[in-house]
Image 1 (spheres, helix red, strand yellow):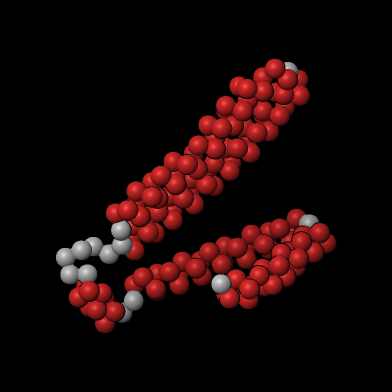
Image 2 (tube, helix red, strand yellow):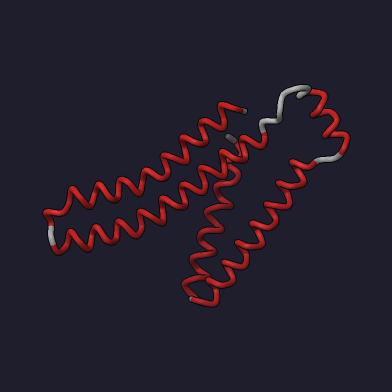
Length: 140
């Protein structure tokens, strides 16, 4: 819990800095932010690879502990990927279907029920990812 209290000011300061940079520079700053995000994703991938790869001593001790049973880290990473992918997909789907639903409702308000069903189906994508994650965590 103390980590959140320490990280929150850093997150807020980063958000404010990004807003100020984007407000002043516009499109050029956006490309710099995308480049910085790409570097951060690459760094996170390297750290994750090193943490999961470990050394031979760590692998030997892990093999001794898990003798016979598979490691649950692969299932947990798969669950994280399932939730992240489904959430991103659902966000994109809701963005397009929600915009189209609002446009249709502005012309014909009687289409409210049909429009909300379509937006709800797009939100269901995230639920499917969550179900897959629960199944994978149960296997771990």
